Every structure is written in structure tokens, then in C-alpha cells.
Amino acid sequence: MKGSRHMNHSLKALKKILIAIFGVFVIIIGIILLPLPGPGMLVIVAGLLILSTEFDWAKTHLHNAKKRLNDVYKKTKNKHGRDK
Image (cartoon, rainbow, N blue to C red; front, top):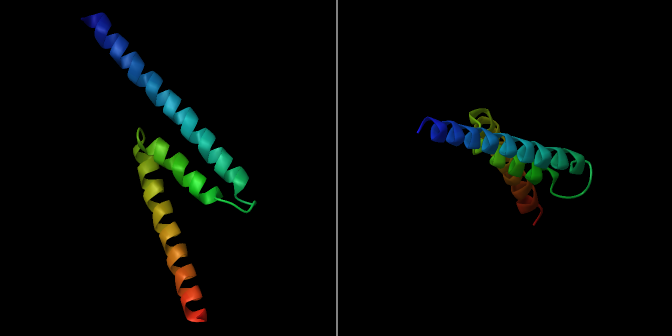
């Protein structure tokens, strides 16, 4: 029983580490894509989404990023709506 708990704890720690590595990798790809035309910011949000499954700080940053993207969307929508 004691060995089973230790194994379970080790698997949870491994899962957290793998999610951290993959999430950071996705964010780095997003940062590289930022100066290029394309979805750099969306890739960064995807990385935060991955990290938020295990880390509370990532949930906070994800919420802030989604709010900023929504603000940008609204400004863009309003700007194009006035041009018509």
C-alpha cells in the first residue's frame, strides 16, 4: 500500500512536469510566431491553457490573456463596423 501511494505520487509529479514542458514549449513557439503574420498570440493562449490544467498562476494569466484578446477583437470589430 505504501509503495502504491509513492508510485501514484511519482506519476502525478511526472504528469505535472510533462505538462509544464509541453506548455512552455507551446508558449515559446507562440512567442517566435508573434512578429510573423499568423496566430502567435493564439498559440501563446493555447500554451497557457495547457499549463492551466496543472498550475493556478497559469489560470490567472490565461484569464488576463483572454480578456485582452476579447478587447482587441471588440476594438477591431468596432473599427471595421464604422467604415461601412
